[in-house]
Amino acid sequence: MFPYFALVYIVEGRGTWRSGERRGRQESREVVPGDCFLIIPEVWHSYFPDEKQGWTQYWVLFDGYYAQSLLKQGIFSQREAFFHPGLDYSIIDHFKTMKLMVENNQIPPLPADGTPFN
Image (cartoon, rainbow, N blue to C red; front, side, top):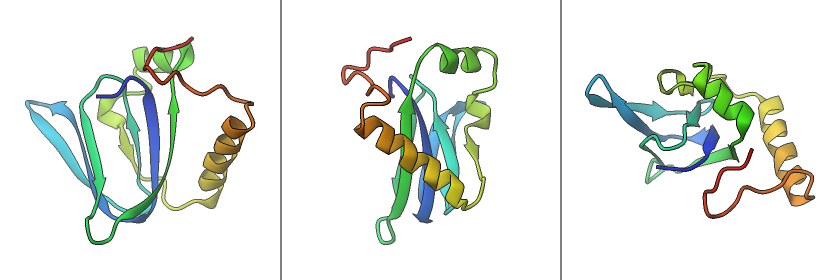
C-alpha cells in the first residue's frame, strides 16, 4: 500500500495492473499503451510491466485536502481507478511540465516519510 495518490499513464509496452478487493476478489487488468490508472492511498495494488516487453510510464504523486475531498465525494474511487484516455501527447506534455515544476521548486516535493500535507 502507498501513502499518496498516484496517477500512472502508460505510453509504450504492456503489463498487468491489480488492485484491492472487489466483491471478495482482486481486480486484475492487462495494461496497454494509452491506459491510465489511479492509485488510492492505503488501498492494496500491484502493477508491473511484461518481463519481455517492459513499458514506458509517466506518473505523478499527489495528496492534500482537495484530493482527499474528491475521494470522499466519490469522484476518485477504486471502482473507477482504471481508464483509457488513449495516447495523447498533450497528456504527456502535462506530466513533463509537472516534472519540470518540481525540479524548479515551483511545486514542493511530497514528504519522503509518507506524512500527508494539506
